[in-house]
Image 1 (cartoon, rainbow, N blue to C red):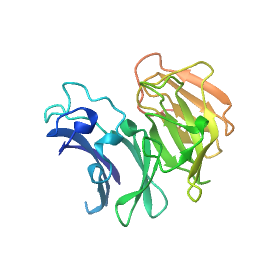
Image 2: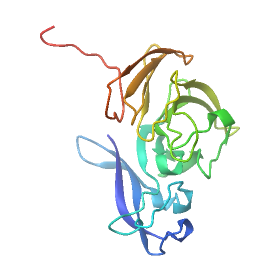
Image 3: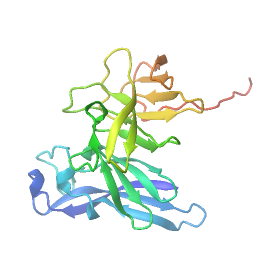
Length: 237
């Protein structure tokens, strides 16, 4: 079982305009054996991700023990083969690959200190739900919220770990401009289609593998952290 947690931790916030003796919400990743409760893997963000990587504005009343600065905001973790994990961090705008054996960062995709050269149309911000797919691409929900003047969208990226480049393969966009400030996901279906959940906007959509919108539905109000298409049967039928 993969787990994410936020832990209040002391940190020097002077590089983001805060106090030297400040506090942050540190991101923690764990893999736990469900049967035994044994922690098989653990990573803590402050060991390798400094506060200065954050794109999140530190407000005047934040950075204290009572109101710690949410500098990284982990929102997804998934396996990346047998030897690593992909971790999405909203407030640094980065997808981190963690090495299982060393419990350290292999590379950063996106954000202030990206290890990859990212094509202009492949750049993302405030993202959620990063996953490596069977064809080697990485998918995610690109919120493009806060200070970014763009549309939210689903993304499929080709990531070349030899050349250290990232390029757009497919984007999944609605017919009309839509900006989802928070949440969101991209589910890959068995036949190649994808489902996009629009997070803080009350919609979900299905697209074909080339990014053509097939249908869209709304639940009129509220939010949905993620949306999935799953088998379902009713009783009585």
